[in-house]
Length: 147
Image 1 (cartoon, rainbow, N blue to C red):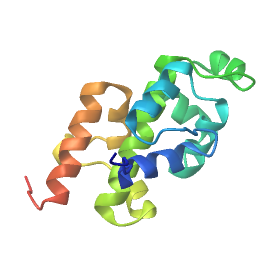
Image 2: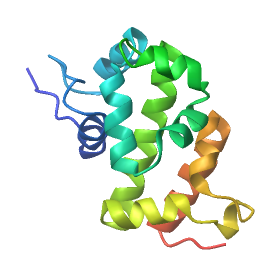
Image 3: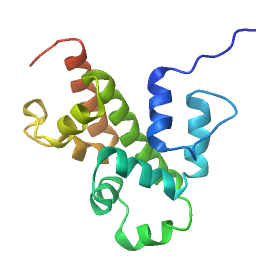
Image 4: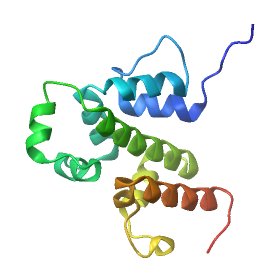
């Protein structure tokens, strides 16, 4: 029987989401199960700290109103909110891999990007299509394919 080796990117996502996101099985399928169950609020706080954003900015990206966010502090995020939080953590992990460290990744994610219409990549993460555009731009950077 071959053991499954979790990818470094998946391990990085787990680390960004915090120690509360544990699994008996490594890999994306266990992360999917955690998303469907709903991440604990501590995962939101871990991502917020890692990406260095005020709570209201991250909640805006996730589409969570302030009053709903206040209720989530003592509970779990919904599956949809958890999926969006996972998307932010995944892009941050991928950007960190591309740029070599988290600080450079944060700077890139928070800076206007010419290839994205001079918009800030972080604000593209509010939709799946926007996330794919950011991922594609990171892929181009990773492989040296410029504009």
